[in-house]
Length: 465
Image (cartoon, rainbow, N blue to C red; front, side, top):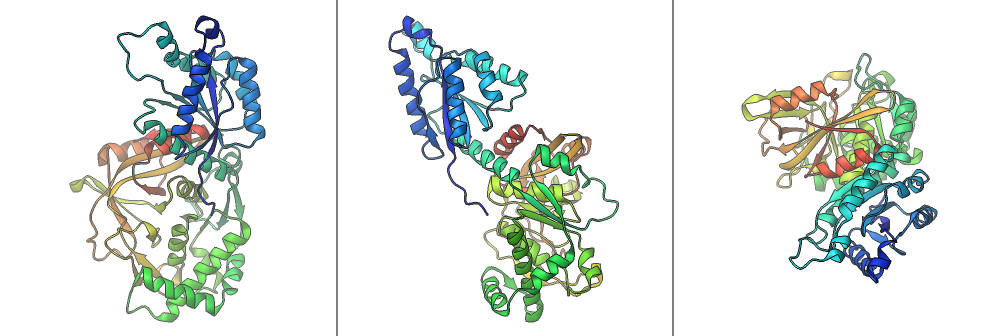
């Protein structure tokens, strides 16, 4: 998986050249201010700033250079008012993600301010002009308005950088599909719409290809991985070593299959394993460990959710797959779990995940070793990606918290209680109204703004419920 690095952002600092005759030295003054802003972002981005853009020709030349240099994105700053019309042609030819950050040299109005101070702090109406022109031209851009001094701007730029990185990853992404559960309607989408709008290519494959990759795993590779898993799991004493080894073989085989084909994620319908006849049990451990490695995953042929999990792993560092099983109205929460898959890297810190020798009758195979855990309690978000037809997609997103509860004694699969910030009844009602799907991606932490930025860069709807 791609190592995360600071983005390289070009600073497009806009200013009206007509102010220099009125206020001699204002251009140099505002250049120093832009350099100060760029330096303050060194912890989250590598900023390139050659000079202020004083007119349409400057804007177009600087933007073209940033594209030629292959930067990751452009951060627009307002050094004064600047005409929005002059931005449009440059941005129509631009291929880099855009952000406009409205910050000011002074963050409060001084009693002794003169027209010069008002001029250098008047970026707000220039930002309005430019934002309106970008909107009417259909050019996606993300926006920030706030302080440059208290960490707000740096946090925004960090989120923008993560969104830019994820947008790029989506454009390079391939998702493997092996089988699909018949009749499951909300996972059906238009592959070309996904490719055009989001970027990933869906590749349909056979279970035989997966089986061949599993067959190539050596006994030494299995032994090394088994030894590692004894350090990260509490192992069920009833789990036969040979069954654990077989699950590890499937994990290593699936990982080889993904690596050799350049897949960022996958979805396999579990009936394929039983129908093939060469597998002993279902790969719950493999799916869980691959999510812990950063791969996207979803069950039952749901390539769209596998894409979403892969995107959230890039955007937020870790992501999980699950589905809503039932409402718990007494504690204003939703119980989420699935057949036996879960990203055990998100396990609560005070307990190891338990690798269980689990009785599981579906598929007609033997007991699949299954990681049992609950995620770390605290802020989290649950989301789904719904295809609305044509090139329209909607991300339905519920912020809330994972509850500190891990006392279900007979639920033999990863699970969590999620309390939506809006309340369980309004959240679930709105989820249904907005077409949220029954498979979801889960991220820990307060990631709402980062996810909303990604949606805006992708030009897809973001609906918070």
